[in-house]
Length: 131
Image (cartoon, rainbow, N blue to C red; front, side):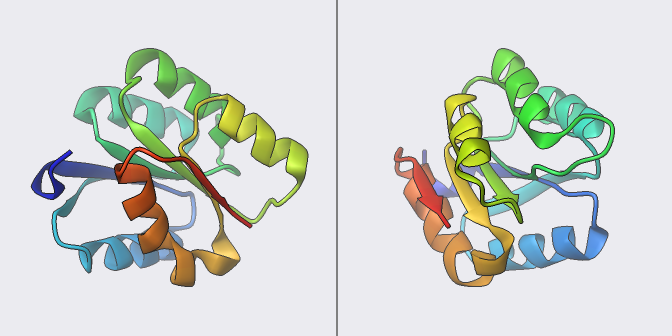
């Protein structure tokens, strides 16, 4: 993917966190935030409508949790790369996320240091877990 074409959807139920992620992503040339969502249902709808190249999403979402949302998005927007951002660090949850098709898993506590590098890694076609 060419950097100038990367369309991003940011999903989290906590608006200040969405703003933090969006501000971080805007520092990277070529990334464009095309939408935001605050719950799993809205995330699925916007993913289908906007067809983003990259989705950054929390696991702990209202209505439909992030893992179920990943599963649903994979069925309708299979080419989207999904980076999950979470406070949850259990091996089982991380493994399930990756098995469902997430491209990366990043702990929110390390997002400030790891997010942009993770985005670059995922956009290069690799998968990564930052715990």
